[in-house]
Image (cartoon, rainbow, N blue to C red; front, side, top):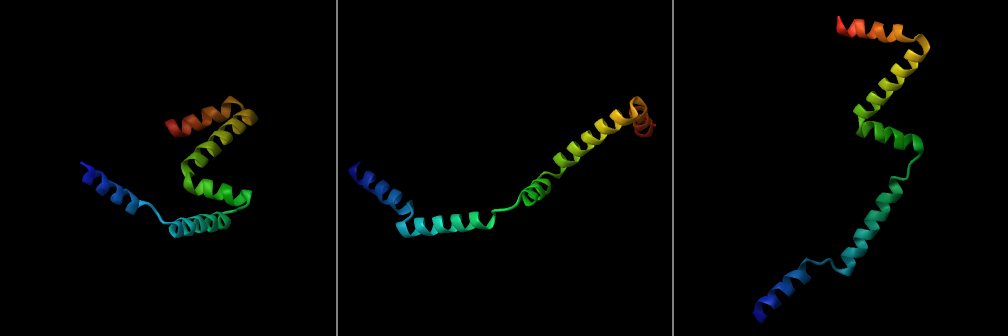
Amino acid sequence: MKKDKGTYAVLKNASLPTEQQKEKMLAHILSEYRIYKSSPAEKLYRLIAAYPWRFALGLSTVQAVLCTMIWGREYTNLVLKILGG
């Protein structure tokens, strides 16, 4: 049993990163963070690119609400007639 514990300890230590590897990973993460510092417009663009369906649904909802507020029920009835046949 003691021999098995030693084997597992060797495997566990072999899988851990060395100090040099840790420093390299940290430097890589920090350099990536500096690259992606972006303006609010770029953040919005990335959000739209990642979730285009959410943006389209939100824009469609805003359009429907605004047009209904401007033209009343007639707008909603017109849209339903066009889509419904």
